[in-house]
Image 1: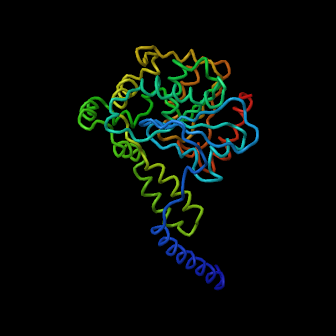
Image 2: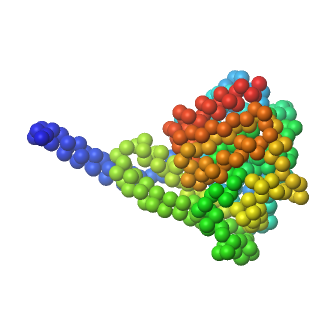
Length: 355
């Protein structure tokens, strides 16, 4: 049985924590979240939904082969560049890489007609050509995250074989039948993609946010409860605000692009079956021969491991590796888990292949 002094000390600590929580709660409501994506950079191309940036170097010497990060079209690129000390971009710059990023603005109403061809045969080639013009190097390494990985794979198979020095994908699906919850919501018996696109033009970000949120319907409420309990912890609150902002900052998708990907990938699973075409050209993943690294998350609720597992066998590279790391879809690439596991692995793998 605890002594009276022990009970008093415990009660005092609990009171102090509750008092601090109340003060911090007022500060939380009144203050903006931390500034994200602030590593210095120069915007090289800003054309409609497309934005290409180059980050300013942080070392005197850089690897010969530049590096292009390709973000998924549903989310903002600052997941790669959260805050100082928790930025993959900053980590790669400090490791000596010349880092570029291709990310996206919300498509305008007049961009509803953008298609997969727009991304694969226009935006990505334009970004790669500008990287080459900026650096004077013909080769490039490409890292694609989630659907940014799908775009990178399609570009690599059709356009990038002569330019591609290395290809890396994170949590990238190729078997869309294995994404069971998305399959249920996109079931063609109940989901009329033509009516959605013809009525709204672009697929709203709010619609996509709800779909992501419902993969774990209790997670947001549980997160808010934990936030309240941990309001006294400045580091926890800072991390919560960063990731909560990014997760809710979901972009709309161009209408025709959404219609096309729903039919070709979600309904017909063409990438897995080898029947995918872009601009009338057959996509043959076996033609990708550059060194290839795929990283999957052990507890990914958005792209389950079964959805990405076939990828390593589809790519024709002799030098290829698949790594499954602890973490989820987001914690794989950002946060403490990523700093310890993914970032050192990525920098070492690229470093040995970028001279």
